[in-house]
Amino acid sequence: MIKKKRGRNLGKIKGFAIQFLPYSEIRNLDDNQRIRRILGIVLGNNILILQGKLEPEEETRLIEDTMAMIGHVRNFKGIELAVISGNKKEGFLRKMKMGLANALSGGDLGAITIIGPATIVKEMKRNPKRIELLLNR
Amino acid sequence: MVIKIFKNFIKRMFSSIFKNNKQIKLGFYGPPNAGKSTLANRICKDFTGEELGSVSNVPHETRHVQFKEKVEIEFKGKKLVFKMVDTPGIATKIDYEEFLKYKIKKKDAKKRAKEATQGVIESIKWLDDMDVVVVVLDSTENPYNQVNITIIGNLVARKIPILIVANKIDKKKSNIKKIEAAFSEYDAIGISAKQGENLEEFYESIFKLSKKVK
Ligand SMILES: Nc1nc2c(ncn2[C@@H]2O[C@H](COP(=O)(O)OP(=O)(O)OP(=O)(O)O)[C@@H](O)[C@H]2O)c(=O)[nH]1
Ligand SMILES: [Mg+2]
Image 1 (cartoon, rainbow over the protein chains, first blue to last red):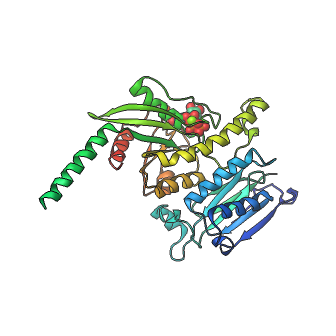
Image 2: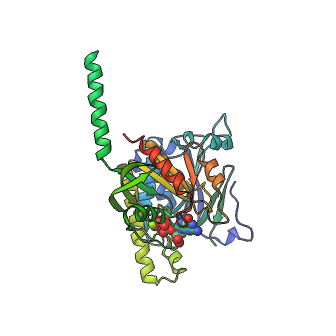
Image 3: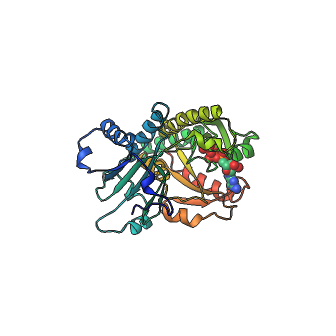
């Protein structure tokens, strides 16, 4: 699922880690705390893999807070963000075909959210089947 | 019984009067560089003779919400009055160095980046105030972009009717089908805001959506 671009050497990238956050870790937090927790991890040069996904309003909050931080945190240029929405019964592709409406509701534990700092993650290429992370040199 | 019918009649009459007087707040949302301002300009130009804002191949050209009040659009003999709201492109990252590629000076690039971050916040704040939203996407780009999904998810959550526009169909790389597949339960139409292609269908859809406005 995570693939580095051909010819790029992952070993050359220094000082970042991948962190997994189970949904249970943020379930009992309010919106504020949840966004702060996520941004805290990303600001620590981590690529965050979050179980589940955010509500649409939380996503816009995340974007707003990210924008506010770009001016205030040195070398922070924002985030890359992608969500894969899994479901027990249906494949992701079928869900995409049915449309995004269901996929848009939050808290779906079958979903996976990937958030990384833009300085490390150059691009997250996404299609219905997979997410590809292209990393900066 | 009779009273109920009478009440309903009054209610309907009032709402139709309000509908006719009220302007419909029509927002243009989407990622940077998709052609929101180009489309808003074309509509404003056609119906008022004036444009709304500046267009550029450099992303984040629009960094403040800009609007034009009381734009009367006539389509097939029907008229509706809109408040046209063009918004800054929404992004999850902004790097001033990207602007340097367009031969913008470092100092100006940094200023542009700063204004762009504030513009994104402004766009999001204005979401609540929209009656109908046109989500403008560049049909040469991958539609499975989280920003697109976030914008649409927020509009759905707020029950705001949306029209998805696959813009830049004049370009060779344009792929409307991919946008239609990604957002299959919404109306999506292909246009070229720059060349003025397929605007009839665009107006048709906007008029249809405007009926859904409460
Ligand atoms: N080929 C082609 N180019 C287009 C079309 N619409 C817009 N463009 C070009 O795309 C670039 C961006 O257009 P804008 O209208 O400034 O885009 P925007 O969505 O307002 O961008 P921001 O204000 O940065 O969020 C400009 O160079 C336009 O000329 C189109 O239909 N076809
Ligand atoms: Mg613009």
